[in-house]
Image 1: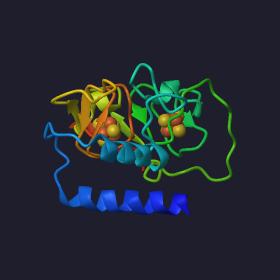
Image 2 (image 1 turned 180 degrees about the horizontal axis):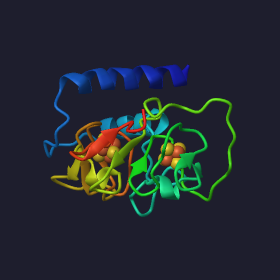
Image 3 (image 1 turned 135 degrees about the vertical axis):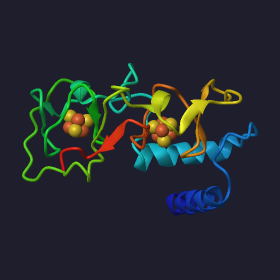
Image 4 (image 1 turned 60 degrees about the vertical axis):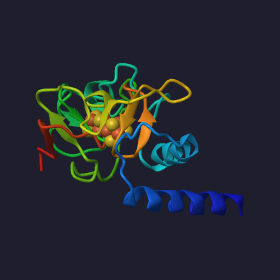
Length: 170
Ligand code: SF4
Ligand code: SF4
């Protein structure tokens, strides 16, 4: 029952967020931000630590545990670049050699390449930037996609940028 109330509350918060600006106004509601961050973490691939967090803030296929050699991936189809590619399934680690019956397409996995930035993550995402003020735990950046404070080296894989090419192999 408590879980249902939390889910209902998050849905109500997001409904309000959708009709209000997500830009950094300099006036913050940390309780609302926390609910949004929890939502972004549980369903949106946002992480500030753990296997979905890259301490280097780059999130490239070359450091993902699903990489397979230099041009392929265990779980995403097509030609994959270790130096300019990434997708929302990114997970740090040594290659695990996972075998799946059906790989995700590059569109399904949101596989993209950034030929100029050669990296992904909040610090180079067009939705991310320096916050007008840090939050109570010192997060220095703001995300205008989610409407919350973020840490610069995090990533939710909705990054965008002028050099970004989506699903180049499909
Ligand atoms: S395409 Fe995605 S899952 Fe595959 S190696 Fe790159 S980041 Fe990892
Ligand atoms: S700045 Fe970009 S990558 Fe970071 S949380 Fe926001 S949308 Fe996601």
